[in-house]
Length: 71
Image (cartoon, rainbow, N blue to C red; front, side, top):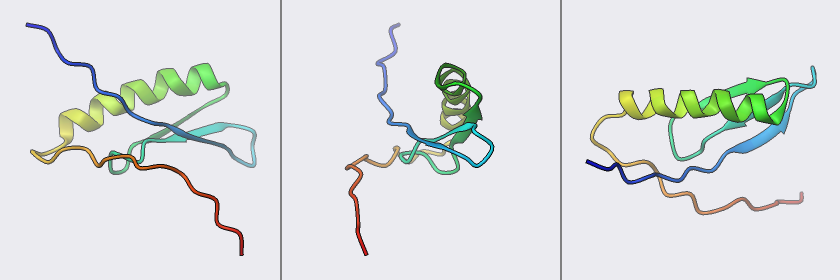
């Protein structure tokens, strides 16, 4: 039985200590960090798998996009 792959977007920022911090906006409280982007992506993959296991019957939110707001 094959599993249909799911696609998620990761928003990546760098914190004040230089660590890369990633968040998956489609899943609640799904975020991780790493010293490199490769480490972050490895860590976030594990976190996404855990978030999907804990997720109830609701589907992930649909990612629409990122917009810049200048004030």
